[in-house]
Image (cartoon, rainbow, N blue to C red; front, side):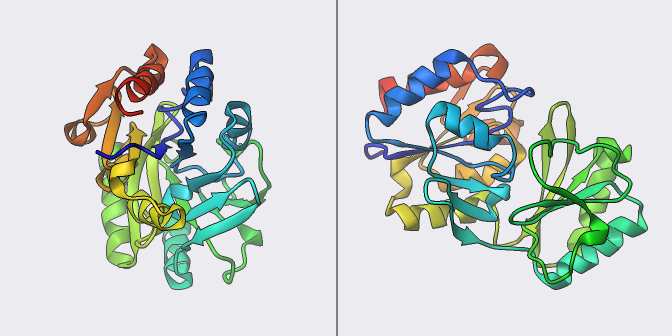
Length: 271
């Protein structure tokens, strides 16, 4: 592997725990990495306007990030979208129709706000952003990601997988990946052209990087595409077995200092 020039890190369960907290040493280690002129970017399922905005400021990692599970690449330093791949208007309409018919709790993530189904009683994890009800959604607006919350819908893992199969049959141009977040789980729907893998390839083009110059760090099913794109990968202990199998290094969970161990490994062996 060449000398690394960038680290692409997942957010929830990797950089931070379920309460969006990170260990103080993480900040110190990231600062040391940045001083070596190595980028530290996020590659997350979250929208930029969620709590990642505060965390990136605290850690000093403002810059180019992959968000919305690969549907957007955003440069927070200049407030500019560098890559955008929304779900097609036709598929968005089909998915909304199916979810409403089944009375599902779900969200639509647009560029600057979130639309929640009318049966949502709380903001779920959209605490820091503009939230509208789906009744205000206009079909011409670009939707980057649709989220189905399994716990909020009282769905088991097998049940949500059944709905995923149906949605894939209804819409052939979408990518659907499962996620876990704060002891719950669900499904993220994006365009088939918007995954962490495709976004990483765009990230390479934007920054003129090669695969061997980038390290991926993650813990979820949606990090499998991240790992297949990066030249070296570190998985957390909480990652699914299939992710750990393609990782080069496995570290403890974020709660047990896994992120510290991952960064220390990079500093010692890759810089």
